[in-house]
Image 1 (cartoon, rainbow, N blue to C red):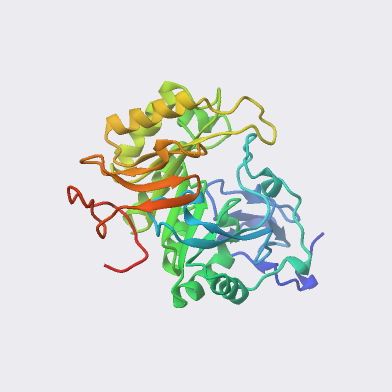
Image 2: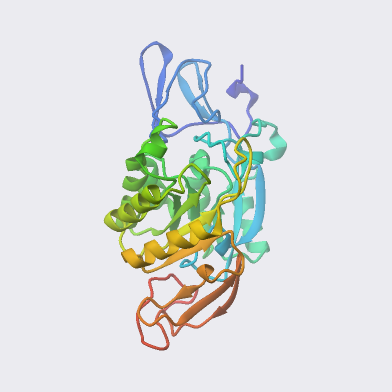
Length: 346
């Protein structure tokens, strides 16, 4: 049994939960809404009920830490050409058999003091690396919820942006709290249609709701649909994603179709390029202004084109921004205003 008397800095009382009868607790961090019995963990395994009090085991318990281009998240319309200090903890609140980051999301939680990095140290590291921002990524960022609430204001005071890469299954209370703490941008994975989510005991409408709310409260939003061979790469599923993207989020929100590679417990062949290209063209034809392809370095689908005249605005190769042809936030050829957040103020 883990006890808070160990006095590890990584163990703190959780913020979003309520106490039930007989020592049980109800977690309020994500929409799984786990009811957790005394001595047991939530689905994510990084929160535990100790005698009727709910604790996070991963406050500042950092599993991976690296300065990375913002384009690799992918964010294509959010401070392009900058880098963000990117970090995560272990585990996840999803259990995707194809997980592309399974070495972190499926790794056994480590509670040693040596993994602890304080919020002050994180921000200092970002500044020392000359990063322009902070990003919680690799695994589901809301597992570091309490930590993020302390990191984000510090980062903001040091002129760093804050962003997360999420599966979009957090509670609305968690989303609003992150925004209030200083969250600027969110990339959400919309993995498929309702049928796709139901087979994993999840609801697509929760993800759409959170993406819609993120946009409404002023967060920069980009959507990624990882197209997985024989799971969500059918015409019907792709059409559903595009239709609901436009219905709930609108034409200006970037939509990235990303190539899957065999990983963890799923070994179907990598997504066929022609399927990715078909999804790209479908989205463009339907009215998505900024469709993209991911994990296909050198493909024209990585680039940003003016929705009105087709002029090449930003050229990329993988996570590298090669060239920018913008007049402020506008196309230099036809003056169409581009939905984008830039490093310089205008």
